[in-house]
Each structure stands twice: as structure tokens, then as C-alpha cells.
Image (cartoon, rainbow, N blue to C red; front, side, top):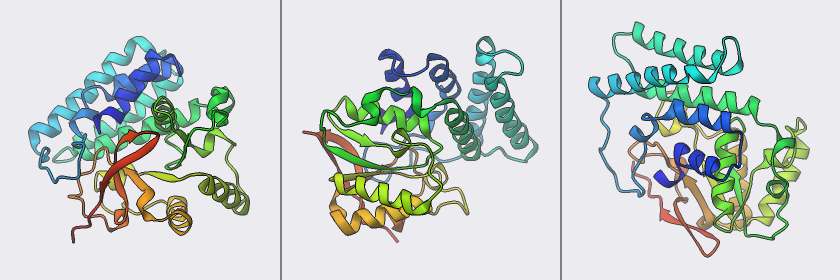
Amino acid sequence: MRDISRVILYDSLSVNKSADEDLIKYNKIMLSGIEESFLTEDSLEENDQMHPNVDFENKVTSYLSSNINNMENYYNEGDRIDKSIKRIQKHIDKEHQKKRTSALHLFNKLINELSEFNKAYIKRESIPEYMKNNKDNLPQVFFSYAYSDKLYSYALFDFFYRKGIYLYVDWMHHDEIKDGKIIKKELQDEIEKSDQLLFMRTINSELNIQGKQAIRPWCSWELGNFYSSKGKDEKYFINLYSRDKYSSVQLQGMRLFESVVDGKLKGTEYKYRS
């Protein structure tokens, strides 16, 4: 899924000047050389392109350390980016203290740190009006995702909008709601308006991080309600970095997103392998 990788989509945001340049630059520099090492092929064919080994672990660590050095011209001591980078450096230092560095865990920490940084940086009131309202009446796809991953969901909206699809991303329509009944009512209304659903897995489940592979509770609720009202054939998922040998029973009945054709998501049906 290279065409919807974070770096590729952030490049597109830069070209179209669709988001804050400093924010995009930070994410692109920190992911440079690293993300492409974890990307899957654009199919559900099982592949063995990446077996963790010492050389691979060292390469990822080297890239990350180099990216931190390359950020020196873009932040001042004590500012938000500086603090974020120091937290990432702590993860590197912790891995160095172990007998063997885990590239999977470092990449996991990097994505999570960038997501937390982006979540604090991006505000709903600053996004363009067309993201908040489907005034062009484009086909709507309901997006089930992690609330913290704001920049990537922003970039995905831009990607699909340019292909004639309105991706419903709930944070773009209202601030975080604390009342569960109100949340369910709003989400159910948007599910009814959507002919298809697109699910984004967590970085933990994609990388097969032990003990953290379950679907998020709200995503599970959304998937279940969409199934009840729309049927399983129109549920798709994004599979950027999966290393689980396609053994997730949670994805059974869904399709791997591969392309957009005539305003519709297209993809290959997932088959569970026990």
C-alpha cells in the first residue's frame, strides 16, 4: 500500500499546501528511510520480504538517529518538536540497553509518538470547511480509526477526496464527545449515510506487537453496527505494515483496500488462515 503510506500522502499535502508545512516536514523527516522498510506489498499474497535480523535492526536504528540529527535546523531548544524528539531518543536509548534492538518496537514507538504530537498540533477549527461538510454530495465512506492519528486521517481524507470520495472522519465534525449515547447516535447516523466502511488497524496489531492486538472498542462497535445495516461485502481495511502472516480472525469477512474505481473502494477478500 505504498500509494497511501504516510510519507507519500504527506508529500501530497505539501504539494497541495493542504496542511501546516512545519508539521508535515517534521513527520516526513522522522519517517524518512524507515517507513518504506515496513510497508507491505499491495496484495494479500503472503510474502517474506522482511525477516527481523541484526542488520535490519541496525539499519532502522541508524535511520532514526540520522533523522533526529536532520531535525536540528527545524526546532529550538524547549519547543514542542524538541520535546517530542527527546522522547523518541529515550526509546532509542532504551533499546540500546537491551541485548538486541527491536526495530518493530522502535517503529511502533515512532508512529505512536508522532501520532500524539500531531493530535495536539491539529485543531478541528483550523481545517478547511469542505472537510466538515459533504456539500458536493460525494459518495461517503465511514472511516473507523484511532482518534489520535489525526494527521494520517487528514491525509487520507485528502487522498480520497481527490478521487471523488468523502471520507467521514468524526474528529473533523465535532470535538471529542464524552457522552456515549450522543457518540453512538452521531456515529450510527453517519454509518447509515455510508455505503462502505474503511477500517484502519492499530500499529500494534499491524506489527504483531504481543499483547496489544485487539480491535479498539469503538472500532469494534462501528464494525458491528455497519455489518448489521450494510452487510460484510462493503467493509474494507488498510494494511500498511502487517507482519502477522494474515492470521487475524478479526479481519475475516472484510476486504483489503487496493484502489478506488468510479467512486467506490475496491479490494481483495481477506481469508483467515488458522
